[in-house]
Image (spheres, one colour):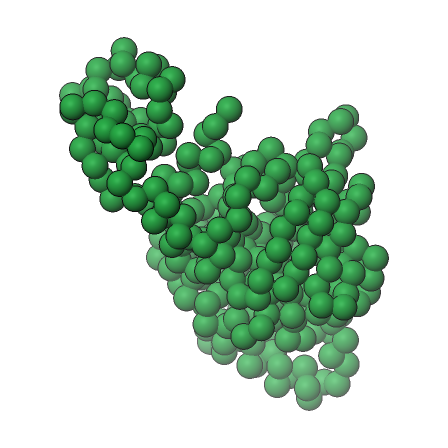
Length: 289
């Protein structure tokens, strides 16, 4: 388990990105869900030893991720939001180079490792292709391959499906779940609720640098069962409805405003009960004042 206590980070100019983060992250796939600017990437960079916090700790097993950066990097696999590649290198050359940086010195061992990784991420047939010509999905698959070098115990994946089309997102989901070993802590940082629902057994919601809640996605959905309602109302009723209830979405249609709200009781006669979704639970937290 990864245990985070009291992590804070304030940037120049007084922007407080993290405000005393406390979080327990068990082994398996853990989703860190929050809107853009919520502090997700700051937290991921601190855990990946790329950024120094102002205070707090992060400990996994016997390793202090903040104080023992060299030890942390030996057990870390990291796919950042912006994954830079040398466009003139092939996929094979890229992984060979990164394997050397991670301490795989023997040529024959590196060759076996690179071939095995390319096969695991379904890029073996593109091994001789220059990565400058890769699609977004192919780049992310290569990113997962490099994150798996060295059999890491902590894997951090930051906004991995942003910009991918639906087909590539599904392929990436399958790839990520198939390549995770038992006992490994995997943190998936994203603002896409569907990614967390598809992949993660545990999650936390972060907003404005604070952890709002940590929970199980399925339990979160169950928590708002029989509390989600939809109706089409006139536009002038929307502001009053927002004042009285938690509104998770509103959409203009030719018949009026189609609204979706969370309320323990029926908001009005025109409202019908609908099945809850994880997105309802998420929006109920991040849209609060």
